[in-house]
Length: 188
Length: 154
Length: 145
Image (cartoon, rainbow over all chains, first blue to last red; front, side):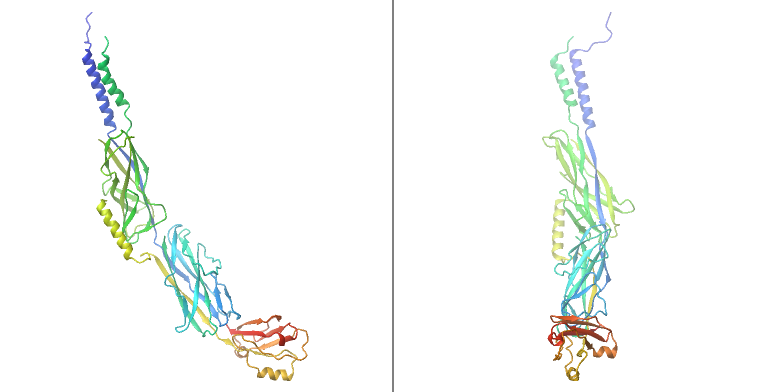
């Protein structure tokens, strides 16, 4: 019986196999010619900070002989001299309300605040007592040596309380003395 | 009839070599982050391929809320192979806050730039930076988006 | 971003940082007023405790008014001082006339005892030291609120 199909020669078989292999290899490289990946990009936009004055600072009535009158951040007054503090006008600490975003921290600067209260001609030296809290209740801080230089927002809000230590002279003239406290806040 | 062993060796070797070729992969290993800032009067924030963040205009950068960082991709594949890098064109990528806030992400840069070469071990790292446009009344919130990087092996 | 633009941006940022003040441009600030009122103290005259002699009354009337800022209030020692507490009513001149509320601070020398304070126009103090008022002078300061 005559064989119908023509068995390929060795060379043809080799060539056919080679071609098959080359085709296969080239085909596999074509699948891997390019690749891509996706990356995520993120950014957080914060609301600008703002600060408003909620209440002014008042030492109330003082008299020569009171010495150094301390107004704590919760508004309570004490004196160091031998003379009683007149109680007709209550003391009050200043309170600043700070707003921003989230629970971010911020810096506090007091540049621009006065270091004396004056009636226009005579002065009384004053040293501010400051604290920054996330609650509207002050702690009654009386330490004036370290000012609150940073604060932390809580759900976008914080509060800065300012009291002070006022030096009343032995012969202080009777008058109304005033000064200014300035606070500046910024994300840090 | 036996096939000559020598004539089969070459195609067989080719076949084996092709089957054993390593898979070329591109994976994203780090996100592109611009950190936190306030819009101020608007401007732009750019993160370089080294992760450095700079701003133009009156945007105010804030040092909290996450550090800025460049996106990172890792390629693995044939050692010493060359590849082209394709970055998104301007005007195609935007970050969104999930509502109506949107910021355009343009000026994509990469390191290596344009083309790169896989190391002898068959790997390479691509860092990608870009510039974010911030509007003067940009709504506050967390913005996210995504972008594609394509590499073509030569 | 090309390297040239990167360097230009760095230079611009450096120049900007050098020119701008330390305070961030968009930092928020506000002020509050601080106030204090210095009030004048009132003059204090002291009477001797009861019973007093006519001599004591005359001496007390002629005695200088108590210093407003807390100096010593001189009192005449009684020759027969009992070792008991004696009340010393303090007459505050302006308070009686104007009936203003006032604050008073009395700093006793060693051994003095302060009794409970009376109505706005009178304060009772006493000295528990041996010899009575003459042995333990008090410093009395009164100021209107």
